[in-house]
Length: 335
Ligand code: KG4
Ligand code: ZN
Image (cartoon, rainbow, N blue to C red; front, top):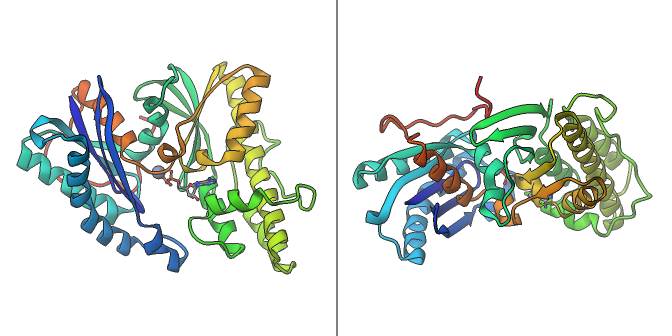
């Protein structure tokens, strides 16, 4: 039951092949980072044009790598949203065209459901129900995952997503895009006693986050300090510590409020080593189970889309027709 998946929601073109009984057969990621880096962020028009160039060659090379012919496929999964609409439309158009040519069903997948369930690609896998801390460039959410397709958003960022804050602070420090990995690298050289930034909403009992005030606090500091490498590292560390404090504290609160004993970290910011280390220590200290995917499955990839595609295909949840549809905004929670 092999599923081919296409992911083109932002600045990575990715293709994967997944079979429920055999697992992940192959996955490839083509990153557009060098294309966008001179502009300091993703340029949507350039992103869609590049997806258009790269998706079909990537499908061919992934099939070749796994030595699978299109005749062996059972369905095509593709990221239907949320994301950059032009980029999503490229993936959706290619998926629907191939579905027509190869006489296969197509399955539109929610990008964040992919991130949420990426830990299912690893061994051991988390068991339902669990709490997920979903932290990416566009989302910061605490989600109660009752079962497959049964998600309840318990809290989320009221302004910037955690990844967005990493990217903006990196820009303030003159670091290249994407900022998360750069801040994380630089923070390792930082002095933890130099700066102390605010932890927004930390004292509030609810499970929401806010990162825009933290970003402004960093900006005010940057404006009054000559940016030597050491000062940049000290600011990076203090900023990262503040984000990690907010994410971990609210996760612990959500575990306590729900009585859940398993925490999953997913999404690009989940690749942050400082966040992983802090949660690993807390899981031992407080006795909850912690799961997170390998770093390449935290950031955008098609393996996670193929996993969700296989689960939906098994349940008969396929697109009703070949209409090409992309959803720039789309909530994970059913109303
Ligand atoms: O999940 P993702 O690849 O794409 C979205 O769906 O948004 O997340 C990308 C975000 C970017 O903001 C990037 O800076 C951040 O994840 N990121 C990190 C790290 N690696 C990627 N943030 C902190 N530490 C990292 N190591
Ligand atoms: Zn993503």
